[in-house]
Length: 287
Picture (tube, helix red, strand yellow):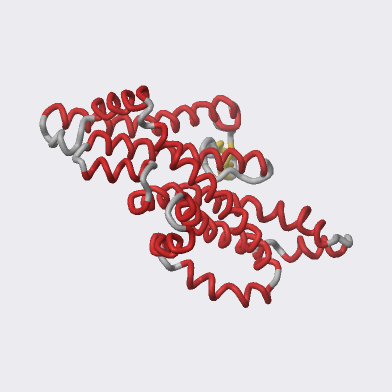
């Protein structure tokens, strides 16, 4: 808040503290409550409009079942135990592929970000592979691993690898030279340079890439399960659509959305624990 105080020879601008400065905790709490309310209100409004459209006959409920119908069908399938095998199959493949892809992407990104000659040798090849749609690699993985879990896990790992590799290499290259020089002045060994300089400086950006990769991993596995799997949420969605069981199809879609959000938030939470010094990638309560 700014007020003008008149004086003899002119005016003086006086900066008075506002509510944010006077009551920061209360202001932050109100801001947080407002943001959470908006985050919940928008999806709730869309669901209500969908329910109303189905009830009034504005849309064909056979093609677009009402949210209440989807909820009841999902509850019945979960209670009967028919839903959990598909949820677990998709989750298992995502976790396995994500772990492999993250580890490989981080190690190679760290190596290429630290060593210019390695980067010069491998970056053109990896750039060429990066632009290839990952689903196009599924037949290759089927030839390599046969039917079963192998192609699905390999496809998720390949997808996650590129996101983590790019974010890691870029983050390591962006570490200021002054940080590296300080480590050399203090006689840091290669391990100490990594532990005390490169890792703290690059890890926040790496974790942002890992969180993006978490959401993309769910998308890829669902698409892959529609093509070459006998279980999983992707298979459930595709098979239900073929049988014109649209309520079951939407149950699978909702499960995919929930799984993707939970997995991304889990990676975000892990990032906050690992990098308490880094600014949060959300602006909640910041303005």
